[in-house]
Length: 255
Image (tube, rainbow, N blue to C red; front, top):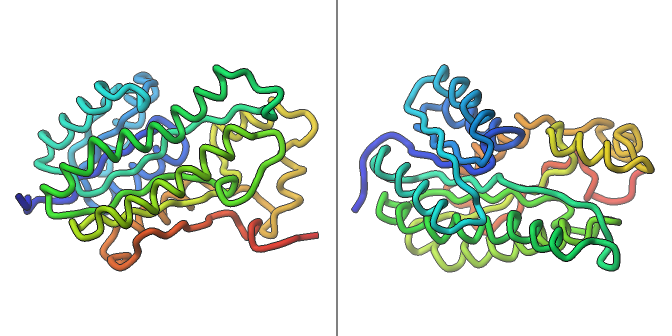
């Protein structure tokens, strides 16, 4: 059943960082937006910011690792907006540690949020997208999903897996009108990046900036602009792509 209504979007990890910036970008182009996150206090702040852009907005507390919670959030958004067209999997966490150092529970947590969270979102959202006549599924991977990252075994493994999952989604659901793509940012000015720098005395922000061809971290809005593009009619033939937003760091050796 095709629903002829304005764009309906749902974003996980929407309380901060790339998720928040993506919600604002989609709202500014006229979409109704459902915000999903565990941090309800911060989510309510973002809800007010998105509402100021116009359109309808929902703030839904749910864990991307809890299937029933996430399914309920997706269903509520689809019911409120009359369907779903744009779905963005932006929830993610990072934990430091080599495979011989990282706690097994921390490994499981990273994989659960970064990979299982994308799987569950796709599982519960794609049916609504098909009923709405098709749409765009975008997952946030990382430049660490394209190459290894010293001391971040769980994070890098989970982000590599996200790209593999997105490629399968692109093949499995293209004939039903769903385009699936991944964005692969480098370091972005987000609360998560601040936590990583604070937790890593050996490599601080200045160190990483010195190794980036553009000499700085990305802004969350710059990643959100790519997500907005991939979910727009301008990218109507873009499917199964991983789009790097890393200032050139994966282009080759620099310096």
